[in-house]
View 1 (tube, rainbow, N blue to C red):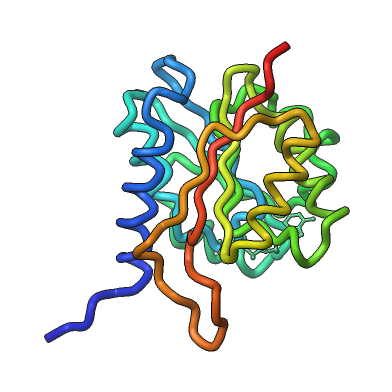
View 2: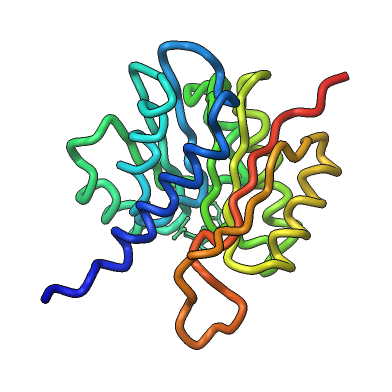
Length: 194
Ligand SMILES: C[S@@+](CC[C@H](N)C(=O)[O-])C[C@H]1O[C@@H](n2cnc3c(N)ncnc32)[C@H](O)[C@@H]1O
């Protein structure tokens, strides 16, 4: 028997978690732009596009960005047929990238790395928030509990409100890393009103 592909299983869980967390939260337009920051090789590209369609958007487009050249090249190769583009970009400097626009309905950061560089990640969060539509959602996922909590605190201090934050009970444990698992936490945030 062929063993189940762990990444495919992760994607099924991520899709279900995002559908549940984002139901009724995304801008109710026909089109959705997704900005995926620090996306690495972006295994989740098809999943994100599907979630956008599942939740009612007709045209869904994604822009992924990461500073690592090799991963972005892999993403470009792997997802050449998707409505997605991948930029080699320092996400702390997105404001210089005006043609990117600031009309993203969803800004997504999978496995943000706040624990390993709080000031750097505050800048990345700040740049991501600036690219959101006023009614858009920011989603982060985290590998471990403390990092997730610290990242949410930082985002709240930046004017974001936590709409939901869910622990994925079935998330795949990382080998040799107790307490860490894939998309262990999924949180949805919005700009605080008023
Ligand atoms: C923990 S990895 C997560 C990668 C991917 N999202 C995933 O879930 O597999 C953190 C990512 O942040 C990226 N990164 C770090 N600093 C960055 C920066 N200034 N601009 C863009 N990406 C950055 C790294 O290259 C790495 O791909």
